[in-house]
Length: 135
Ligand SMILES: [Zn+2]
Image 1: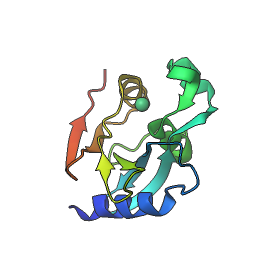
Image 2: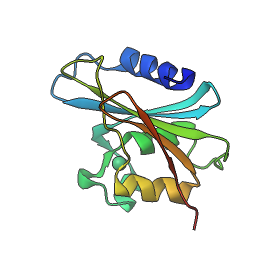
Image 3: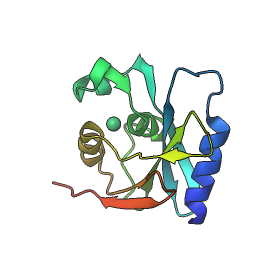
Image 4: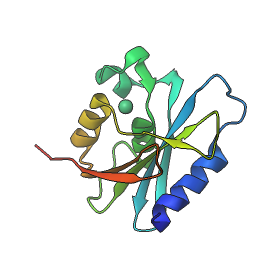
C-alpha cells in the first residue's frame, strides 16, 4: 500500500467514532498533496449544507467528499496537484475497508470544484484512481 494511502487509513481508524454504532460504515475523504493530508471529511447524515441541497443529495446529508471540500475551503481555488482519497471503514470490523467510489452527485460536485484526481478503496484493500474530466 502506498505511504499516503496507509496514512489516510490509519487516520480514518483513529477518527472512527466509536459511539455511533448505528452506522454500518463510515466514509472518509482526504485531500492530499504527495504524502501529506491537507483536509479531512467524514460523512454526516444528520447535518445538512446549502451545497448538499443544491446537488440534490438524499435527505441533504453531507457526504465525506463535500465535508472534505468544506474543510479544505469551499471558496479556495482547487490546486490541481491535490488528490482526493476516499476510504470506507466498515463498522463490523474496523480493520476492514469497503468500496468508497464517489456517487454520481459527488462526481458532479468534485468536477465542478475542479478536482481532477480521485482515489477510492475497495473491499480488498486495493486503491483505484479516477481521473475527472473538466468540462
Ligand atoms: Zn457522494
